[in-house]
Image (cartoon, rainbow, N blue to C red):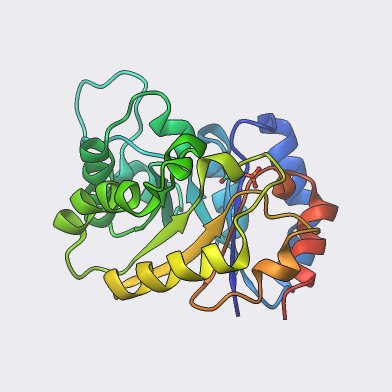
Length: 235
Ligand code: PGA
């Protein structure tokens, strides 16, 4: 069984997210893989109620690095737990692009663990960094503060090269295999996910890779037929 995390980002309105669940949840419930839906904040409570007592899990796309307090616009991990979340994405490259640092991302992961939830820590290099042969160095840099907070707790690492997100491009199987083997070796308590242009076209090759527990699917997960196709193509 693999894990498929549907990261809807800000692609769908509240009404569209609820409609997606109303129309497709029964079918999703019957899939043989583990599905984690990550809607936007306003949809969490309503969708969380629908997912309650099903095997389909709820995830949030981010959280505050503070437990509570005067932080206008932020959402605490403990509120996410009360909304029914079991997972929280932290450090997505779209969040990092806004200037959120590795240390703040590690604090978010800590808040997630304190709330009894599982962090899915996103890491990945830019095209520029890849061209300079700095991929491992960048990933190491991103993971180091995470190791300090996570210690021995179970968590997920989603390896998402920034240049692969929404571009239709993916690393070669050889490149991915090397990175995944290294991540597995250096993060024995982490489950490994891959994200970045996971589509019906790329999933067959990606699903042959060793060490992977699953996939983080962005754009293609917002279209139910595409998402269904991706999930159905994995044994
Ligand atoms: P994508 O996005 O599947 O649209 O490339 C993945 C992500 O950003 O998590």
